[in-house]
Image (cartoon, rainbow, N blue to C red; front, side, top):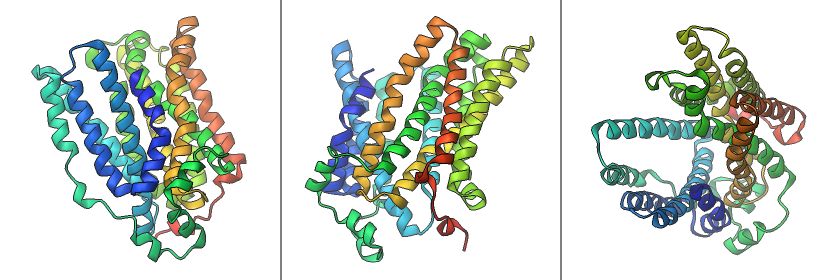
Length: 360
């Protein structure tokens, strides 16, 4: 619980610092704090100290999130094509690699301290590839973008406490639903396979197949943009989420064979992973293309709205599961996928000129 609390507390701080110091500097500062707080967690032997360190970890996590995505939008502009989904695909590969490293460390009996020391070393590599923010001010002639990029930090800080533009509210609502879906998979997929599918630990592959499809989907998203455009991609994503949850909840327990149960539920989780893969990077890409608010502030506002999903999802799923069944909870979460389709279909926020995403 202390990790999401730290992330939530850091939301206004992240937008202000990134707008003041620039994304390149903040990426370096935040990744140092991120890795250091993880390393300290490995040293904690007292519950209150652990809670404090998890809070710090959440703060640094959000600082990383805002600064990295701001850097990603800046690089996307230099590149001249939509590539945000590929960056998020790299994050998904990192998540898979982190899970694999953790699994190996547990099997080998390595203590969290040495495990986190290794991650500390890995996390501090790659800083030479970061881009300065300054060049985009001379290369971009579009007046709206120049105004965003040259907005001063104090004004950006005040923007955090003003009424956000309607575009960000609409994007944020889709992001909120998406984070509820992500939380349902990140926090409850293992529980689902254990308590509903009743498979042995060696066959509890729900989270694994979800992450594999999430990473795969993100690397395919740019091609999907070229074929159908961003709006259509989001509509398909919401449909996959809805179908995936209902396939798992309604059909996952129909067959008596253990193999069929694993296959059907894995298929449902794969559809959810494919659907959720493109939503967040596409929302960030819409922010870069349409928002009139400075990028770091716009991402902070979007994150503030979306992050509510991470806070309410554990309570929502837990309460429904306790009162009824986790399958009912998963069907209700699946309905949110249909809500995403409706919002994207009828909101003007998702109407965008797609010509810039076509291959040359």
